[in-house]
Image (cartoon, rainbow, N blue to C red; front, side):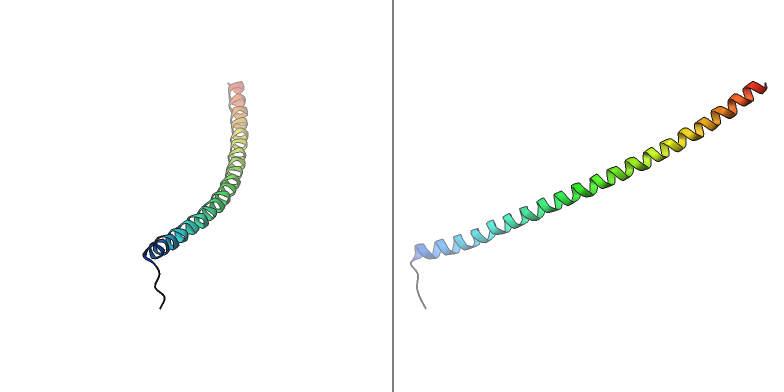
Length: 79
């Protein structure tokens, strides 16, 4: 068994875990960035879909409003 000087033991016992933690942080940051980009894409798609649905509902309501207005006008003209 090789005995290292105390200074080298301290450097190894502190340095190796520190490097492992830093590598873990870097990998986690990459994964978080990838997740952020994926979520941004999903939310953008969802926003477009919701806008299309709201616009379709708005157009439907405008058609109903037009029919109701026409019927009311017809009833008012008959009176």
